[in-house]
Image (cartoon, rainbow, N blue to C red; front, side, top):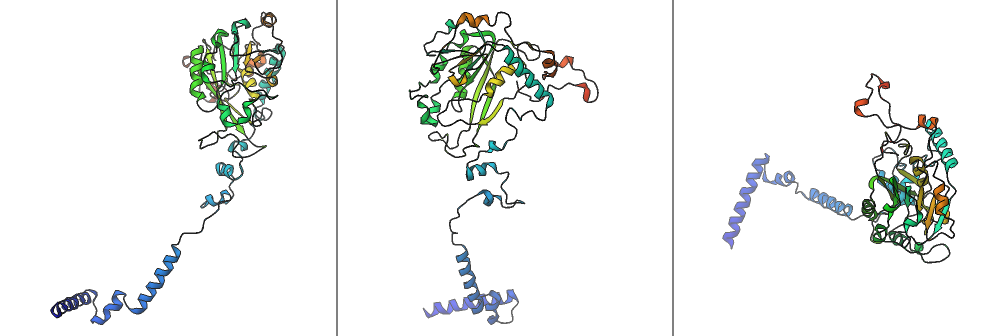
Length: 393
């Protein structure tokens, strides 16, 4: 054992000699200060390690009360542009802050377009037929009894999807149970029987599986999908987080879709006697209704009437609140009926469309001419643009 100690001590002495030569020290005793192993430095190291251990302790839980915590590195702590976090903080949806979304304010900066809208509204009002309505069970109703082919059909089915968002929609005003429809029932509607050879259908299809199922319905009825009108619901009056929240959903759905289908051949550049395109856009931003309400924004009627000049208009699944001049409203939730097929047909014998005045024709946006007919002059006057709204109607 003593021989082993002697060998270890000799190896230690040689290592120290080698380290002393490496660091350029004059004696072995200076190795402690050179290697930082003196008693003062050891104590300093102990203090530093203790401080590091204290600093590495997990911080106390932070409660986030507003969005200023997430704006580190910005010039201001004002969360004026963080609309998503603003919704988390106080329940105001981002779309609440979009300006000039109402019908009265939308065209303030476009005087010609504002004049066009007023002229078209006056013409639509002057040529509108008296409102007609028919209380009936749409599921068992024979549409041939209407004895009319319609230019526009607006379908507003009571989808089963709505029951997942709010149980209060299960009853109609008065307390009677509401009959909800699945997509197989909607698919079986004989819409093609009452659609004119060139016509349009507008189908409210919710915000989930209805987008795919709605396309299947349009295809079966003989229509081609040509547009998707989106309704963005605001909650300015009653902000909150759990108004419409389906089971197992991660995000709150604040929009709804209305698919538009076209039947026959209708071109915006040549069929100005039947459609006026690019007058409105394919977006509706308005306040959502109370929980349990089936009401859709009235702007959908304005979009349809501005777009299609045909006067034979049908609204399926309508209610007393949606009865409107110029429309035939059919639905089980109506409280009365005044429909007469002969009287209704007599309204269109002389004027099947609203027509158009010279001033409206001059103001309405036109589609660009065909490529071969473009006037390729120099400067900004060589091409006439089609007005605001690329995909608008």
